[in-house]
Each structure stands twice: as structure tokens, then as C-alpha cells.
Amino acid sequence: MFDLTGRVAVVTGASSGIGVQFAKALAGQGADLVLLARRKEKLEGVADEIRAAGTKVLTVQGDVTNLDDIDAAVKATIDEYGKVDILVNNAGTGGEDLAQNITDEQWDREMELNIKATFRVSRAFGKEMMKNKYGRIINIASIYGLVGSTTGGIAYHASKGAVVNFTRALAAEWAPFGITVNAIAPGFFTSELTSHIIETEPFKEMVKAQCPIGCSGTEGELNPALIYLASDEASYSTGTIIPVDGGLTAI
Ligand code: NAP
Image 1 (cartoon, protein in one colour):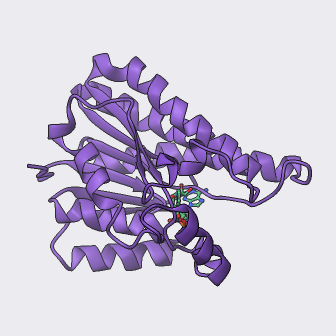
Image 2: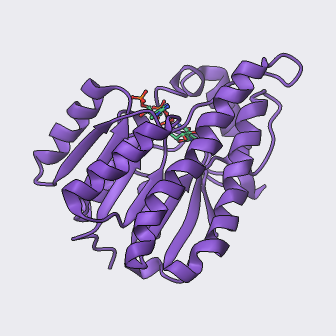
């Protein structure tokens, strides 16, 4: 089960954090990869590491908020592999601004990347998936797309909430094309985006008190959900949101 040999998987935001883990996990199941992000050097470092284990990896330097870059990524993918089977919409950002303080510019920045780019990248690669009547789209939402918090991040919550219901709506629209659309809602995982918060003692204390499992997630703990949703075997799952959060949203 969960063999991805022969599948072509695109991962956005694969130059750091969770996206790197996802890329390695998909490669581990046999998929050929397309890695997309803005920082070329970082992307190449990740790609070299994965290639060393024998996987085919295409890197595409690009900004997912830029339509030309998205089109170029689709073209590069089709030129290289002739198809796309799996898309992981992982590129994202977060802010901690409170509603009364956030600027319009910051609000737009988070919306542009977290939801609008997720839509545009899905639209572009989805058209290719439709040609083969097969696709697996996995959006990376957040527990903050499911619940609020007292610590700020209004645009992050709004944009990730949008990712959650975008996932459901797209799943309904694209089921007739053989494309499943699901989301993972991670809890807390250390990355460039989060380490300045997650690794502080007050935050660890908060997690210990509020999270049933009592700690943040560790490397690899998101991968089983991803691999399941990316697999042929997940053919009857679409429009689902899988929290991987140590039980945070269960209480
Ligand atoms: P991260 O280490 O900061 O990774 C973000 C990735 O997105 C980087 O590879 C970055 O690469 C890429 N990216 C940012 N803007 C981009 C753009 N305009 N175009 C293309 N790529 C772009 O953060 P992370 O924690 O791994 O986050 C990954 C995803 O998981 C995000 O959607 C985040 O909201 C979600 N998430 C994370 C957590 C957590 O605890 N870490 C929890 C819930 C959800 P470049 O800078 O090279 O472009």
C-alpha cells in the first residue's frame, strides 16, 4: 500500500520546514518530484539530498503569488515528466497581528499567499490533472483554519479557514475529473516560520497544558497523513480535513 512509484508530485514551499519533510516523504514512497520555492540555493540543497537517494527531482524557482511563475512551473513539469499526479499546496506564511492593528498590506500579503496562491496553483496544475482524469491535491491548512486563538494572527486564521472550505468546495467540483482534494491541518511544528515561538519556554508550557499529547509535533509526524492522501488507496477520501495536532482541536 501507499506506493507512489511512477507518480509525479509537486510540492510548493519545498525549500524549508514542513515542505522539505513532505518532499522527502513522497520521494521515500517512490514519487518523482517537482520542488517549487523562491530561494534557489535552498531548493537545490534539498533536491541534491533527495537525488542522492535515487529520486528524480526537478527544481523550479518561482513565486506562487506570481501567475507567470505558476505557468512556468506547470510548463517545466509537463516538459520534464509529461504529467502531474500529486500537488501539495504547502507554501504559506503567518503573522501574529491582532485585528485592531493589522495593516491592509499585511492582510493582503497573507491572503495572497495562503489562499489566493493555493487557488491559482490548484487551477493551473488541476487542468493538467483533468487531462488524465487523475489527481491528488493536498492543501496545507492549519488548526488555525479550524479554531481561533487568543494570541493574534487574524489574517492567518482567516486565510487558513478559507483554505479549509476551498478544499471542500474544490473536492466537490473536481470529483467528476478523478481529482481528490483534501487538507492537512497541522498543529505546532518547528520551522523557519514558527521556531521563534514554538521553542520558547512559555509556549512549551502552554502546549503542555492545552494539548492532550502535551508537546509540539516532531519531524515525520505529518508524513503519514500526507502519504495516505497522496496515494491511490485514498480514492474514496475527498473534501476531508485531517488535523495532525496532538489532539489540540479535539478538546
Ligand atoms: P517555512 O519553513 O517558513 O516554509 C514556508 C515555505 O514556503 C518555504 O519553503 C518558502 O520558500 C515557501 N514560500 C513562501 N512564500 C512563497 C512564495 N511566495 N512562493 C513560493 N514559495 C513560497 O514554514 P512551515 O512552517 O514549513 O510552513 C509550511 C506550511 O505549513 C505553511 O502553509 C504553514 O502555514 C503551514 N503550517 C505550519 C505549521 C507549523 O507549525 N510549522 C502549522 C500549521 C500550518 P521560499 O522562501 O524559498 O520561497
